[in-house]
Length: 216
Image (cartoon, rainbow, N blue to C red; front, top):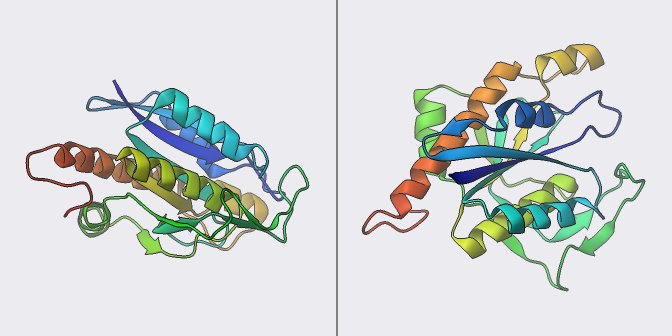
């Protein structure tokens, strides 16, 4: 079967858990049409995460990739439109490392666009299903940007579909840590599944006669 790769991150910065890890564990092995979901949890480490992600992409060769990160102040699920090859952080990762403007690769700034089917997500997930999903150009420069850039580059080079999304904390985590922004876990799962199904639809259409990937 074709593979949909979902990526998540382990807990970071004192949070009890990361809702993206919970979603990956819940959806791992789920079959949607002729696709099967495979999930991995990346370390919150600038020095380890990218290599683990690259190795997984090389091994699995997924047709669809949806990377996920938790954004503690987000109020909706955010589809990130672009990512860049610069790593910068004032907050150390779980290894205690905080990069200061280093390039993930090369020596010049590179911006990689998403391969998400934006119009399909907007019409199916937002307008029809009324799911709380928005688009953004502010992925940041922490580990989520690292994963997003790596995923976007892979998809653009291999004519795949997908990209990176940020998720708010779940209600349970918000209650435990007294956070102001959150969404129920079921809503978060529904958003992820709708985005995955939209990617599957786009991939099927892009191999139909006369259709080019990304056309709406």
